[in-house]
Amino acid sequence: MTLRKGDNKPPEKPSHCTIYVAKSYPPWQHSTLSFLGNHYRANGGKLPDNKVIAGELGALAELKKYMKRVMPFVAMIKENLEKNGPRVLDLKLEFDEKVVLLENIVYLTNSLELDQIDVVFASEADDKIKEDCCPGKPFSVFRTESSVSVSLVNPQPANGLFTTRLDIRQGDTKESIIRRLSRVNRVIKDLARVKLMRYEDPVLGPRRVPVLGKEEQGKLLISDKSTFQVDVAAKKVFLTDNGLSVDIGDTLIYLVQ
Image (tube, rainbow, N blue to C red; front, side):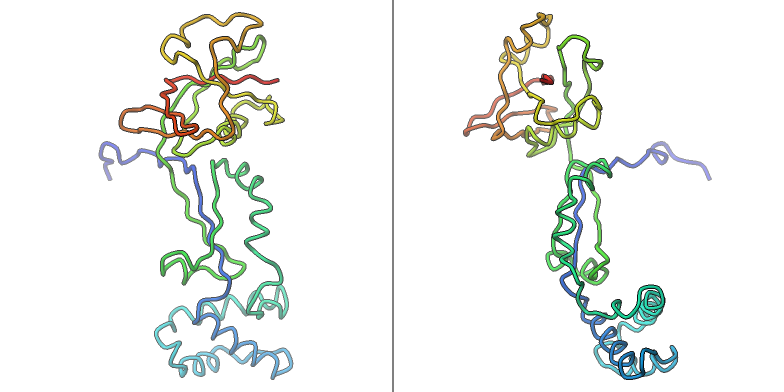
């Protein structure tokens, strides 16, 4: 087969992810689990064979339209039952899945090299996600947010990485940019030691030669309250603080204290 122009273009690397977690099983799974749990307890820790299970479940009105999915679900539960014991028949988890994910959100974000991960309940998602998401089995949706690339310059002597390119996305903050920068510049271990700045004159500032010992001259500190806005069509980045919006040009400065 001959590839057309553009067919072999690699997909964009995702920048964001939404993890959906379920408070409870979808109704058809809940009914199936309840059925299996009742049989398991009534028969001394044993389940009927699949023919009996399919017959009884198929007679339940609420499961008729789901039967193509019910038996594969039963097979999965049986397999997990052998490996992990009767707790797989519980209708709720022993822990708060959303809390556990949020407690580990920094590790997950860095490990997956993403800019942001949101954890939300499946009840806020569309019907497909609601059907596929269940306790202990989160559903992840990856996406790539639009961005504008700028240069990040470190004018400090012997820094090892004078300049690098970084994508700025809508709603970015000082913290999110420094965190992203630390994935590029491995010298940065403590994010709190990084000062992020912009040029007072975004046009002429980047053209001036840095002066040793005066790295902050002609630059303004970016505050924790500032947010970045991007105009993808115009390839411009703006900084908003206290209701004022300024064009930062195509360069930011960072200093490692």
